[in-house]
Amino acid sequence: MNDTLREELAALAGQAVPVDLTDRVHETSRRIGRRRVVAATTGCFAAVVAVGVGAAVLPLRPDQPADDIPPYALPTGPITGHGTGIAPKPGPLADATVAVPAWRAGSGCPSGSVRFTAGATTGAPTQLPRMVVLRAVEADGGSSLVAVLGCYEYERTDYQAVTMPYPVRGAVGSSRAVITTWGTANDVRSIFEVAAGPDGGVSVEVGDRGDADLDAAQHQWRTYRWTAGRYTQTSEPHTFPTYPSTVDLVVDVAASPYRPEPDGPEDIVFVNVGIANRGGVASGPVYLQLTVPDALEPAGDAGHWTGCVRGADPPAEKIVIECPVDAVEPGVAIRQYLFRYRAPKDWVVVEAYADQRRPGVLERDRSNNHSSAGFGSTP
Image (cartoon, rainbow, N blue to C red):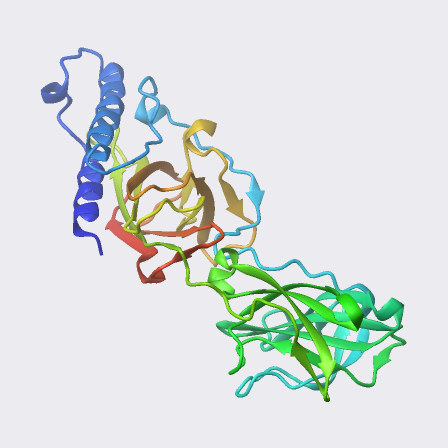
């Protein structure tokens, strides 16, 4: 963990605890004093951010009293922070029985006769391994079909490009594997598209990364032809180049309650998230995911939550929020978010996860992309 980043965030969180307003500012009005607390928090926030190279700030409104910060209703939307995946387009294989060729050695993915309904194997979406038809396009003048199958098996996704007779009449009696990912003789980790290639061949758009790194994959089109009883690659390139650039995001989070009234409840929670980029190039757009107890609710106005969405299906007693962050240059970017207590909570844990999206730029180490912070409180 980045100790310097943690110290900076702790200093920011410290600004949110009750302070002696008379020592900070000379004001006669408690309401004016509260405004000064918010302004002072923002000022220190900017000062600490200046320590990091290329840091960015989402400031609080200095004219808004802390105890008057209203709840903010976030729009509900899909959470995309852990990889966007490949949108399925099953076409004529949406409802069909397919003879699926064998997968890589050691795979638990099903082969042989497999039934697809609505483009996926039957059963609950959480039942693994689960296979889906990602693509299905005509080839050979409409006499055959080229398809991409994806199989989700716990932490790994396998892909397979296959050919089969067409048109499909409820069942496919035979199919041929063009290429399977994670094979011992290839460096392919994902398959995005297929198309009819020249001279009866099959063109396959492949990538060198999958799963969490799918969006950073380098893409190549490779062509295969049926020769001597199997598909063989007949076009360059045969390998992927070494990754030209890497980023290394380190996430830390600090959270602290703020008590507007000296003897009153702790109404507001300040959450400061630091994202350090220890790589040599700027990241792509970063998707920041916050997970908080449902005893808290977002607060402030739209300026505090620009582009953020609230997940539609969070874990029990949790709220999951995803917010976009601009590309992070080498150095540190810090964001601050506000919450209000919706219900009493003795112990609050806030989690933050960040992931970047830039094709051709690989995340070096995801082990530091997650952080959490907790504090005790009895509103």
